[in-house]
Image (cartoon, rainbow, N blue to C red; front, top):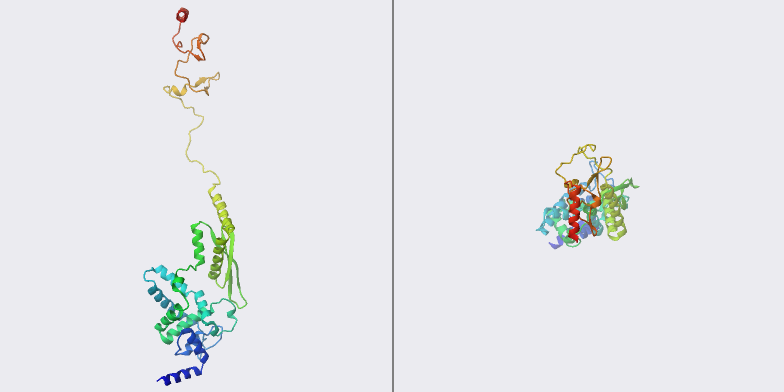
Length: 357
């Protein structure tokens, strides 16, 4: 029995021996159908066609592997975090299957060294390794089934290469984090496109810059708008944390903007209809106290005195020359509106003289 198994292994290794050994190191088992794995490692830059003349590359397996990977990782995350809500589970799964993570895994596992390409596409960050990783998962699914994909992700990836708890609680969406910060601080933020071009291989290449309140932040470049904006956001966040003068400049610009917005250009006209100023309103006769400070000038115009109102008394004095002064105060007891004769005045003066004696 054992000898038959060894003979079979030798037969398999006789052709594509190095590929079998390399795949065993990567996925942890020997393939049944090696052709599936060869296709998974064939980049579209290699112009190969099947017997029907159709192009052969790893794009179809990449499509299948992407769907299987979402299902497998979703299953693992669901079981690993039993008390977490849907949003947390979705975010964690996205971090595990995002292109940057798969690119890193492909590089560390040696998948990149097995990819067949024309050699030109590997000169930039084109996600070739991440695409091959997904295609490899698609090949495992067709060759061994869903459970084999689950074992591969659990025992080979999550048990040896990725700490799922660390990934789950690590913030990697720098663009979202910068947007959240700007909204909380009411800072105007924008991404300015600096350059959109194609490299020598025809791949699109983008450069974006973060702008905060008109203050230029950091720039980022990549082979997609999302990648370049993520890079620019990450560098801008780091600069905000490390350079106090930069954040001071941003908030100074914000203060100038809000100040300009708060100052009105002109006063809003009043819509109430006011009475005409030339109409003289007659004062009621009973309001004597309000008019006590008034006197009439030679122009028959009422004028207010600056002095405080005097105590209530009769306004008409019989003879100011005959007023008596006691120290610094006037004696107003003899002031009356009743007319007096000469005889009355002499009699009052004599009575006062006798009283003083």
